[in-house]
Picture (cartoon, rainbow, N blue to C red):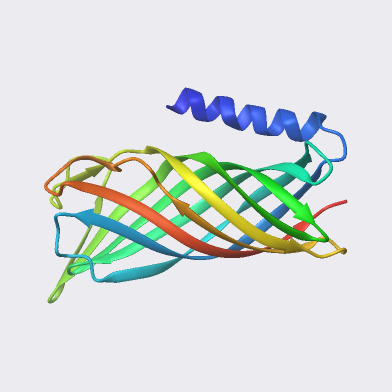
Length: 196
């Protein structure tokens, strides 16, 4: 999977460097993450995370463009006696329609886990475990996943952009553990800037 992610990142930068009339930019924002541990009653609620990275608009038609992004995304959730803190490198690519500054689109992407920690606190004791290796929480996560993405936003004439998106991970994130499956999804809002 690391090989595929490296290829996608290389294609992203090669496209950005060689495309004409391309607009590239940066963005940062917040998201609400939800981790569904199917078969476990320990989920309490959603948790707020953050996201930030690079984006581009590559015209493929009069009002159509490809919108690749490379983002570092924090997806959190609360569980019994603690929380899961997950950080992913996400590379979504959406086909967007734009008219008079408004944009809307959909696509797919890859995620790769950079960090996954389980933080537990019970009475006066606390512990932190990596969820990518065997641990006392009895859950081991996969690093790689595939996402679906839906996005909409507005780009002002001066290049400032606002964006909202919905991004569920489509595959089971659990590699081994006691629950049936683990799925993640986020709803996010970001502010960015497209350079001329």
